[in-house]
Amino acid sequence: MSWNRDAAVSHIRTHASGGSLSRCAEYTRQAIEAGGTTFDRTANAKDYGAPLERAGFRELPRGSTLQPGDVAIIQPYTGGNPSGHMTMFDGTTWYSDFRQRTMYPGGGYRRAQPAYKIYRK
Image (cartoon, rainbow, N blue to C red):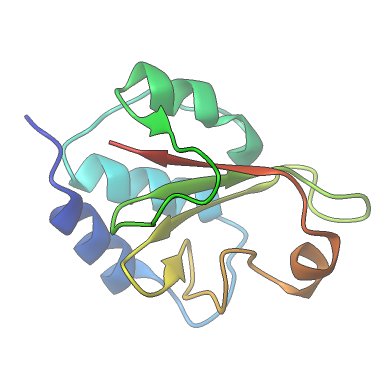
């Protein structure tokens, strides 16, 4: 089955809650799988870069124009969730287990602005 980014984006939009459930990697992974791509699972959101690459996603250079279906893997910051964060862009908004205000899922991430990589298939 080929990658259907519209199906992935539709899935993440319709399954997102009103606030964080602390299940970002699970929800984002399920959306990617709803788009027709399966890949290895990891325990932490911060570690999904390599599995995404093995599944055919590629890391985008900094400053690339974002497209629906792009996935960000965000590293943890001191004092924050040690698992990091995983989120998908729908063309205007970032989603994980909830609808986010920005790519960074909360105030701590926005203040710390930890390292991240964006992937596209």
